[in-house]
Image (cartoon, rainbow, N blue to C red; front, side, top):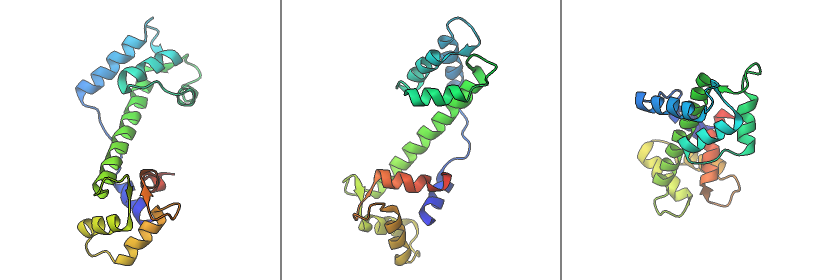
Length: 163
């Protein structure tokens, strides 16, 4: 799919935390490892996520993280924690980037994109792209064929290739 491939290229493959951000993550790990066990329990992990991202992880998210932990340990070691936080930060940055692109396309701030929005956006970024291709892209992204592309439709299209 044309649109998803463009989105896949826009997604950063790797992202490195700044030294100060890395230091903050280590400090949060240490603060949440109250008994200096060398790892974070499930509850410790939840507190760390609240401290770093401002939300309490769902049971499903906590289960997914804990199931990925090495069975020989009792929790999440520092290196595993840093890797998890880095991936969460990458996903957050990518989502913010997608939202920014969607908002740039949504010239009238309606919360959805029309074919006209797509046509104007593509004229700016790919002026030689045939009109029929833009129409095909719009139809493919418009999941429910209502003539509007919601952010959910847009997000799905941008992530299509990763699935």
